Length: 144
Image (cartoon, rainbow, N blue to C red):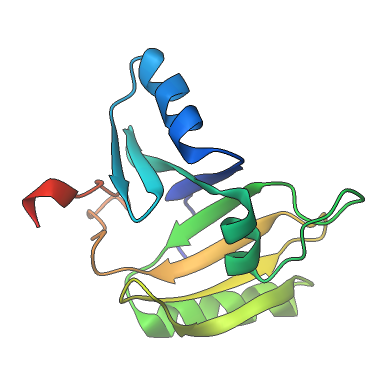
């Protein structure tokens, strides 16, 4: 398994407000379907509604424990690799919260939580191709 973090997704209460904040810091975001993507070096930093992110991770959000509001993503090169990495994580003691399956964005992904409850999405996303070094580039959504 290649080791990398491809995306960091932060669950926010108000996507528009959070985007404006990061843009005041000089970041340039692109919004697609109520999700804002920022290029951050070789990874993407993403803002998404907290409730939607928790649901997508298969985690119940709540005041005591539950969802931290942050999900890390490890993008891989194939659907088979998603299956392999999720299975490896489960054998290592992770809890699979969303088994690998086709996604609404045309990819394939599964989610697990590590021993401390941190959410990891393992994803094959043809819209975010990986470079040879494993870095991703946020596509120009306006061009498509």
